[in-house]
Amino acid sequence: NDAKSRFLAAIGHDLLQPLHAAHLFTDALAQQLPEKREPVEQLRGALHSTTDLLTGLLDMSRLEAGGLVPEPREFPLAEVLDPLASEFRALAAERGLRFAYMPTRAWTRSDPQLLRRILQNFLANAVRYTPRGGILLGVRHAGGKLRVEVHDTGPGIAEHESQAIFEEFRRGEDAAGQGLGLGLSIADRISRLLGAPLSLRSRLGIGTVFAVELPRVASRRSAPPAAVRSGSAGRTLLLVDNDLVALEALRQMLEGWGCRVLVATDGEGAEMALDKGPADAGVFDFHLDQGDTGVALYERLSARLGAQPCLILSADQTGAVARKPHGSGST
Image (cartoon, rainbow, N blue to C red; front, side, top):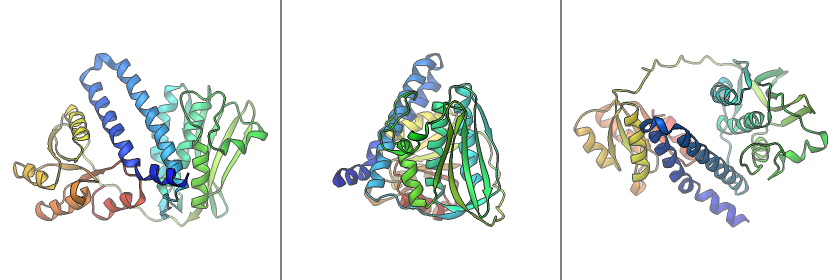
């Protein structure tokens, strides 16, 4: 079992990379064939289900193998909650559910990526199990603590099942779609890593509240976000990826948005492409050939041509990869 967990944790990037390319091709197909919207949406749904299942298995393997290490820092809760609210408001609307979000200015200290995974599981379950009514995402202040809560008007959970639902491979009888029943188990394990206790209260026929408790820290002034020109049409983008399938999929999608796309598979090719004309921004894969990385390439090109906006992409979910772009000026 230990060997299996280490193996799955190690090959996560290679398993998710072709799925990432498939998602991009599907987006490009939707742009090119608007009359085929229904089968394309079905294909997109199947890919999302496959990705969700695989991500759950890989997360559990990383947890078992000790490969998930928290990287706590101080941050405003809105950094995590605002994007989640936007994402799940749309998902709730698709199912005819109301979605309410109470914004907060509170700050905490935790690992924002791991906290997002916990709340993502809470919200996904709320959407999945609530047949009618609504969902509420908000924060309660309790002394020196913060409690992020997700309320739903679903069927509720019997008291004798309140512990069992956090076990692996436990799913509700009314769960829609595919699933392995790993979501709450993963959330529980992550909460222990973060030292952020989970709580549950529920009434049958009324609804359920899942919550995670976090420390409260003093707020800091945040610099206002830089103005970003909306829209991508007409921009020239430099795309660098050593995976030819992913490169082609992303090229098609970006060209469908009206971008002019320069493509390269390595640093040398990127420099040759830029010799023909400048790019407004870069989109680089993190892992390139011969030990090179998208971050290192961005730094070399910035030193030579001046800094430009750059997006670093990767299916590698390890903390080391997530940290590196922030120190370089790329995203």
